[in-house]
Amino acid sequence: MQTAKAYYKRGHGADPVLVNDAEAVDRLIDELVNESWENSVAAVYVDGRLNQAGVPDHELLVAVDYEDKTMGALRYMGGDGTYFSNGGGNDDTTVLYYYMGSDREFPRTAILPIADVCAAVKEFLSSDGELPTGVEWQE
Figure (tube, rainbow, N blue to C red):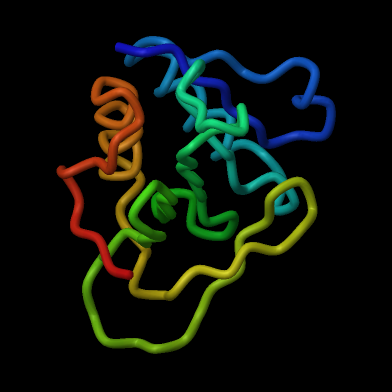
């Protein structure tokens, strides 16, 4: 499993949360579940996976519903596009999660059980930051 850096609080820029095994992913999700609404999203990057400009060529946003802590959502950005998890349904409304106090809009259909979110983060780390295949995705 690769090492990733996770950011979800102010100050993490200099001191991100390091995630390098399944237990660390579980801790990250547990920490997000216990955070306030303003820190309900973590941005996760596999360490060392950079583009030619020296910045990450991928991003996995991991969101936890601050009202229903058993649910969450994912957004993956990589070389070929941006994808949201697909929890099903046809509701075309959006839901807001918060990354360090700034809102992040997700389609309501992106909502998944938190166990699925956790499994996808583990797969993200084990695949060197590729789009996890254990969940369905929508553009």
